[in-house]
Image 1 (cartoon, protein in one colour):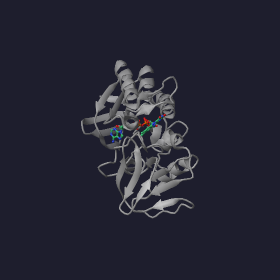
Image 2 (cartoon, helix red, strand yellow):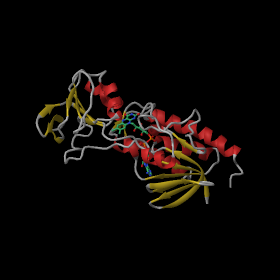
Image 3 (cartoon, rainbow, N blue to C red):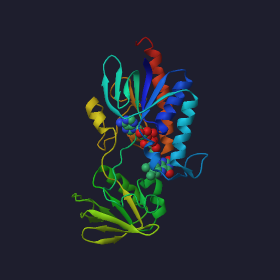
Image 4 (cartoon, rainbow, N blue to C red):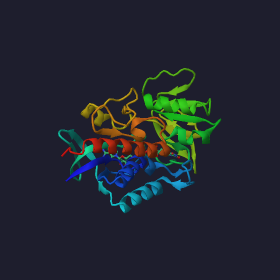
Length: 286
Ligand SMILES: Cc1cc2nc3c(=O)[nH]c(=O)nc-3n(C[C@H](O)[C@H](O)[C@H](O)COP(=O)(O)OP(=O)(O)OC[C@H]3O[C@@H](n4cnc5c(N)ncnc54)[C@H](O)[C@@H]3O)c2cc1C
């Protein structure tokens, strides 16, 4: 069977796109292996009409809505994509074929590889400066990372505090007027919330620690397929959410911009309009 669209990702971008396409009477397939960024989000407080909803509950609600519309969904990790006459997607749970592809794989986040890495998630440790920076206004902020992703988080955080320490985990960086610690973090310590960060050499009092390790998602798929990315590793799309390869679209965190639920939902809805036009124009594509 050839799907109209394969959607990789069941976060807000992927599910929003699938719902719009299904309601245009097209046949999308959603493939995903996790709840994405929302699976890590304790509570969402800034989405229209909802307050204090758990990230996992928001994903669950989206998936339920998609299932009620009888959208096909597969729980699997996509391992490769080939573009031939159609788009062929290989997964850990079968192979699938479609006329168009929507990449909504979110942003890959790497965590600290220490036993206490997740001990203070939501109580002093955050993975999203734009979401949580506000809570640490005027406080001691730590930021972990050394690449472009860390720099973009730093640019958000510096509006909230002038007491920021960047932990580079051994990397060399050069950001003026900021404390830089190269020593690796070995432990996060506190009681009911984070109190200090222990490196090999020293102990640092920190109120809020932001993790910005690693690179953005989609990068390996992008290099495999020849998809254009910007200097931060985000996929580049045109105004119709199409990548530089015909029939391959992307939206949500994978294309950068505002890394928030509202924007991911909007990307999914707008990309659905473009994919509908693509499918209408190429309806003889068999
Ligand atoms: C801790 C935290 C707190 C946050 N708080 C807020 C907040 O308060 N308000 C707000 O608006 N936003 C918040 N965000 C951001 C928000 O969660 C994201 O902007 C949003 O989820 C992005 O949606 P998306 O659909 O682009 O990607 P995601 O929601 O990340 O979904 C990505 C999907 O792609 C799938 N996937 C990736 N690779 C593969 C593969 N190879 N094969 C199969 N599937 C794959 C994943 O399994 C997942 O289903 C927060 C994020 C985090 C991490």
